[in-house]
Amino acid sequence: MSTNNEEMVVTPWEVSGKIDYEKLIREFGTQPLTPELLERIARNAGELHPQLERRIFFSHRDVDWLLQRYENGEKFVLYTGRGPSGPVHIGHLAPWIFTKYLQDKFDAKLYFQITDDERFLYHDNFTMQEPAKWAYENALDLIALGFDPKKTRIIFDTKNIDTLYPIALNIAKHVTFSTAKAVFGFQESTNIGLSFYPAIQAAPAFLESALVGHNVPCLIPAAIDQDPYWRVTRDVAPKLGYYKPAQIHCRFLPGLGRGGKMSASLPETAIFTIDPPDVAKRKVMSAFTGGRATVEEQKQLGANPDICSVYAYDYFLFMNSKEIEDLRYNCLAGNIMCGECKKTLAERVEKFLSEHQQRRERAKDRFQDFLFNAKDF
Ligand code: TYM
Image (tube, rainbow, N blue to C red; front, side):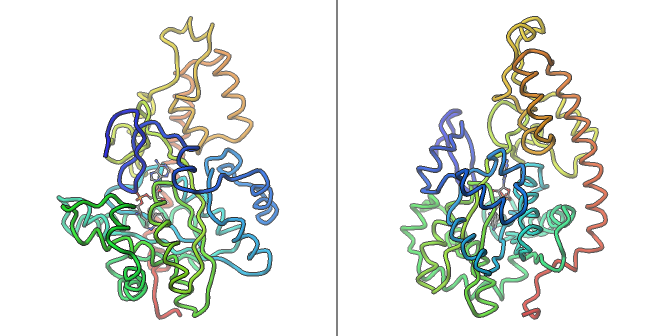
């Protein structure tokens, strides 16, 4: 795998280089979200989420099929997740915030998988305690976003393995090692736990169908790095008599540095949900922007929002459409300086974090209400 700065790498474990989303659509064989499809989502949902309007969610598979069934009265379940290797950063929150919109608007049940097994297997230096600790901490972030406890079930792989295992076994039997190698880039040196793991991540896509005894459509909202799992899952689905799960893919919230996605492995350029708000503020104030070398130059020539991490945060999470339009205009026209933008974002991030952290504290009392229990079926 290349780590060359410019060459694009998008796998479930590495995202680097300059991301060309059009190319990903071609290479991964997904479909762009067209204006017609957006209009159809809006018609069913009552309103379009800003992440759709702004094409942060930009690609899909079978969302048209899913909506057809929905329009004919068939409900679907949502499925998404988290690999608990450390604290959640606000990039992870983007697809979860969108998932909440889908839950609310489509009255959909959500299965949320926490892959403590994947993270134990992937990180050479992890004991099983590390992912177990983060599994709980990360679940609090999900709950803090306001998901409905009656309609949301969190699956912890190592705890709920009795439910997942029979489904995963059926999946695994239909995936050859040569497919797994080609899709995930496994090497001779990869541990055998990781080579089985994709069957565990595929399993929740069929969970509702397996539990209720008839096919239920499933939609997976996630960033596009998780797509290799769904390619394998979709190939296997008809062999097991299940519907293929549909996907809707989002872009990556960049880090605060120059280029690259927000990543926990670069903590100075990532805003974690558990960062003290003043620490997050300091990170924002040192962010990379699209500004010019001098104030004079910027006033004359304007700055470049398209490479600016501060603009990206406002665009992804912190500004409404009117605000973002004004900001873009003023940035390009040289009417606003980067210091001002950073300050505005820092204030919004501080406010968001202090509110999120309060909700996260309250989530501790509600944690039990979200746990998956096979006895509910
Ligand atoms: P993980 O923990 O790497 O990522 C959790 C979710 O966050 C998305 N994501 C991002 N979205 C926007 N901007 C970013 N910078 C960014 N970084 C990560 C990921 O696409 C993911 O949706 N193996 C998975 C856990 C998992 C899962 C799933 C994810 C299990 N089942 C079903 C999605 C759907 C993982 O380690 O995710």
